[in-house]
Length: 325
Image (cartoon, rainbow, N blue to C red; front, side):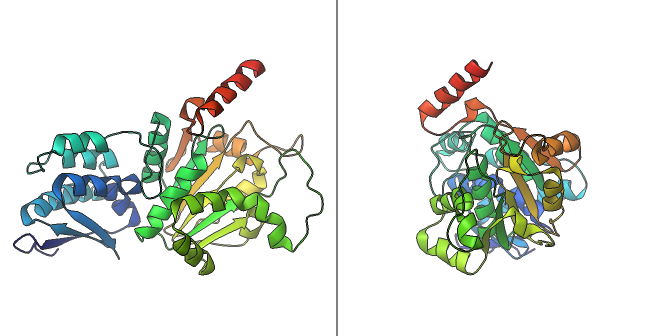
């Protein structure tokens, strides 16, 4: 532990022993980092097993004490959540004059999703972000437009920027959605590219064009069909399986067992939109049944009330639901 330096240019370092410890302290999508900056003018930088705090000496010392309290609890086996850290941060003395307004803004407000400012807009999305913070494996199911894929990719990009993972692997099964596309031109990569387009769209919404191209060319971010996952072991990776309702049971087992040391997995899907042949059991439905009470695995169920696309989309889903009922 480095002692704070005197004056306004003070700095101190908090050592973390794992990516899980860093995730709890920093908050989902670095929500606690933003809270600390807004309330106390303290900047937090995550680098190689340490969190560096910069700012006014008394204030960074107060933030450091909260972080140390959280780490002590985690290492003693006591339950400490991101919300526990945020609550203590809001209660610290010495906040700026507009602390109350800032704290209210950082508490579950639901602003519009924008590049670099991704936060939940519904209670279901709040639960989703919290689950990704607290579990290494998360299943998110719900109808179209609830942010399942977008929030997973956003969390993955933030984990990459915070250096808690070294690469992102975005995966989709190449299953036709109710129509036969025939023989598409080009090599295999060209044929499967349309299936992966939604993942590229999410990345382009979250990254500036130069960073987007750099990450893809250097394979820091990999977007691939599910068939490419067989035989691999992915360490220190954030792995997302999208449209998981279109996996078979063997494919789901194969995918989940690719997870290596220091990795996190998010599986998203809509059980009502299965495009598999009849009498083929969905790997997502099977996994939800198997893992409902398995420790370390989070399951989040989003509903039509969590739809964040155009307002008409929510009404369309309700209309289809009423007719089906």
